[in-house]
Amino acid sequence: MSYDSRYFVAASITKSGMMEDAGLKICEYNGDYIIYEVGGIFHRFTPVKKGSRLLKLQEKDAHMYSSLDEIKRVLKDSKTVRIEALQIPDFDMDPK
Image (cartoon, rainbow, N blue to C red):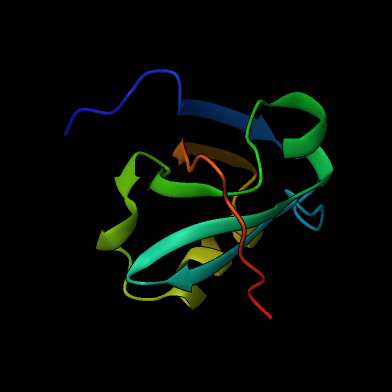
């Protein structure tokens, strides 16, 4: 699939410890996984922004994961986290 390169981002971080929070908060919205908050390591060291649609996690298509809980588990349990995401222009959504 082709995306406008202005909105595409690939990023990778390595946590200093397994208990460290990568900083991505993700929710499911209209069948997509949306990054609704960026903090921690991802905020400090990558260009990932709030309002990005998660395309890949650990080089695996986001929709290949069985659930949002599985994605959260991979984010928590992985020492190195690699994502590809697509920024959604004019993002405005409160997942709560």
